[in-house]
Image (cartoon, rainbow, N blue to C red; front, side):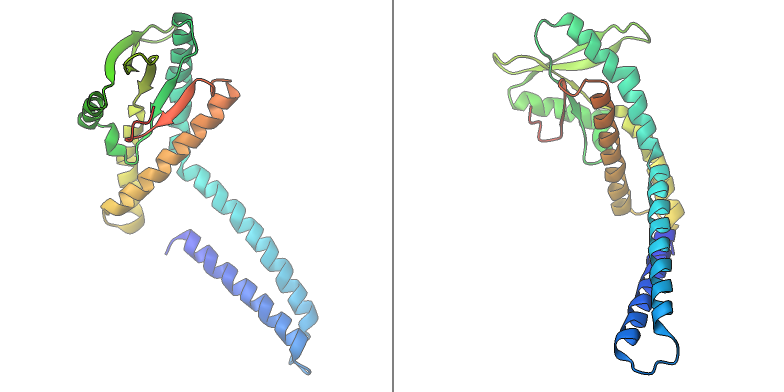
Length: 221
């Protein structure tokens, strides 16, 4: 029985008790206790406990998904921002940089990435790996994609998310005591969404949101 489930039970009991006391106050002529102060007191307690549990749940969620935030921070600061800067120096026109966000973590494994590149070719996209030199750190490879006379776009598969695989396995096993593929996929999706949310906040703060878009296996560029 996890903490969230216990919290819900406590809240249900408190608010049902408050509602019951209010009904007694309104409809019972000679109750065995004074319902007015009991109703008010239960209402105050229920409201306070609801606020505390909501705050606790929020902090628990932040802690649980802190790994996604940390990965997003490293991805934006160590790769994405330097890559955009390098491309802006190189290009004369506005650039479009796509981040591939998967539904499942295994979509970022090398064999799947290779299949996605083949799928792009089936859609008449040509692709070329280019190397970007950064002021700090080692050069990084990204994919340049173009179609017919359309301008080139840039695409990156954030394989840093693959580090979440073992963490997701651990979380599932520690919660249920067994391994569930469905639970693993569900939790993986939540981590991916938190990663995306963190990236959106960071690129907006850095003024990079005009250059960056997201895509998935539909490859809508």
